[in-house]
Image (cartoon, rainbow, N blue to C red):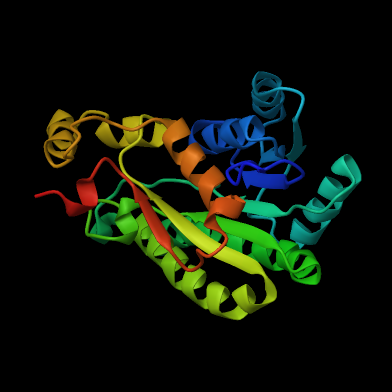
Length: 253
């Protein structure tokens, strides 16, 4: 019997794939047999990340804020691998830690552009080929900020909450044509973003751990393994879902 959790023959395009959660996702998908294309703005970071992943990894320099170039990115992927992506992971993002009343419109829109418009443009560029093949998986990396109120992240919360609306609408439109759309909502993962959020704020770090039933931070591979599952045949009847990978924080008291 074929292992339903394998991704052999699949090609995964992962934005923000050079570091943090994106690298964890790429690493896990390669282990599951997928060819992975990691995308980011820093060539040296991408080169080093691809080398750690192994022979199944390649990279393309690209800024998701360059909205009009999304179709060109897809063409580069096809040229590099000989096939269009069958998996897309919208992971690239930026973080802004500021109280709402101190956040300017420009700062707010910069976060929205990177997360929401960047992922929408790339999804729109990738999805037609998936529809043509009647098969594909698109994953949005959401957040606990998509699910409940967190102070000092107004722009990030707005962007990540928008992801959930996008997932639901895209799932209703594309799933009848074989393309599944899902989200992963990571809890607090040991990453550059979480370390930045905790910097100079030990009380916040303790509050997070005290509200997490498992009382620990997660690892990037925890998110990567969830992405493998949602993209695999094992999840063929799952679409429009938001999978919390959070050590229980979303149900903790």
